[in-house]
Image (cartoon, rainbow, N blue to C red; front, side, top):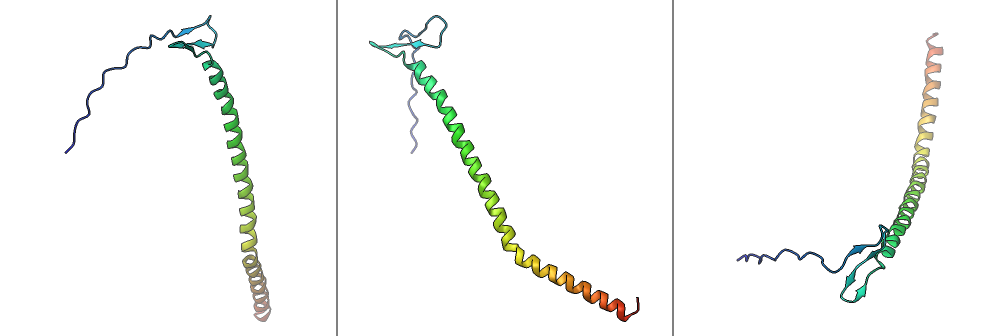
Length: 106
């Protein structure tokens, strides 16, 4: 049997002393007696992390492109013997057609 979840009260507004200092990106918030002015530093570090992530994505894309080139070369090598056989068959057919024309005086 399913039970309904109890309704939670709405969250209380943050009245812990959040304030922006002089229009800068430094944010000072007091939670109890602990200042959290390092929030801006964390955000800067997170922004720097996006550069690292972008570089990792680019490196992975480069690896995929290199792998595609390797696979393409392998595909060409795999089909080369069959293409050689077909080329020989075409050359043999051309010789037969030429000989048939000579026999029929064309």
